[in-house]
Image 1 (tube, rainbow, N blue to C red):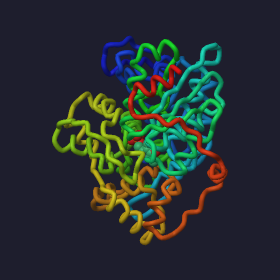
Image 2 (image 1 turned 30 degrees about the horizontal axis):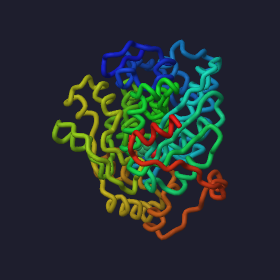
Image 3 (image 1 turned 180 degrees about the vertical axis):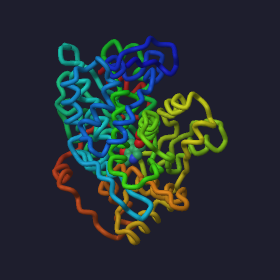
Image 4 (image 1 turned 120 degrees about the horizontal axis):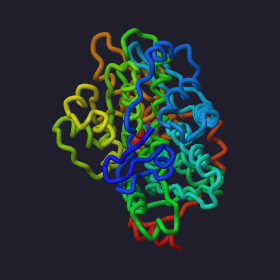
Length: 428
Ligand SMILES: *Cc1c(COP(=O)(O)O)cnc(C)c1O
């Protein structure tokens, strides 16, 4: 597969180069030259395939010759070695639970795949690669976990001070070794802006081989397609599902649309947003206006200028009408999100996290008649205990997989939100 830059001012590259660079030199996002269409037979017999088979068949065309088959098979096996259950909540709504990985949120799959790819590409290299990543909450932990101990790769995570939950903060500030956490006195957009400036900065690029682990990186973005295949494998109804994805940077839902364009049967997509309603407003007015991010209880979606939206536009060849016929988007406020957590717990005894609740409400409002669909439940409710416990009045049991974190000490570097402060620290 060949990748081009969406700014069209950079050379075309292989998967390996796109993954190592992260972003194209012209600052565009890399995009695959074509979307492979999977054999009908493969889609029809999804149920009889193993997760590993699906992973390999879906990812192989995107990886091309960059990684030998046996190594790719190994990488995929390690990436998806936990469950992705589709759990029915009500008659019409199910949840694809994506929180059974090591950091209890869906970003584990992308981070694990990407870290192993970079480890492979770096296997003979004497220079270190430095992964720079901005996180609104979950990316940091997943990237830290995915890259911990990977030879030749250092990871620097920028997160907004005071705006991530305690479990999230521990996941990204306690691993140590090749992982450093920078606590930025600002919001997620500030963190993302620093990362973008760093990639464009000559001095920094002379000293470091920088790459990004945000969903702008194709090695993180593309494997997220697998969720949608695993969900459809478990789908019990004849009609294809309406799929509702809690969205922030729009990488996850964009991967879902790629899966659909490869042949996966889907009736409609809904991007569920919190108060950060840039895309819902765009779909209503046709005018895209980036906004300042505002803080909400679904903090991993506090994004005012979603970077992957340009990829969605490209998938629909920049045609607004085509896009609108397949993708809806709504904004759900914090009060409604809390009320949804409470109602769903009381009515169906299912505990949603705030991100899943945003999606549940958006999907419930959308479905009519006999339509059925599923949400992507992107994080375990224990990552947001203040909200969930206050709403339901119950304490959430901390899963064993995160208990060990509670005794660890946070280590971070506190910086202001200016790029200069970050650069000074990097050049120290
Ligand atoms: C990152 C994240 C999202 C948003 O995903 P995008 O791919 O950025 O749209 C939603 N929910 C949770 C829990 C997340 O961590």
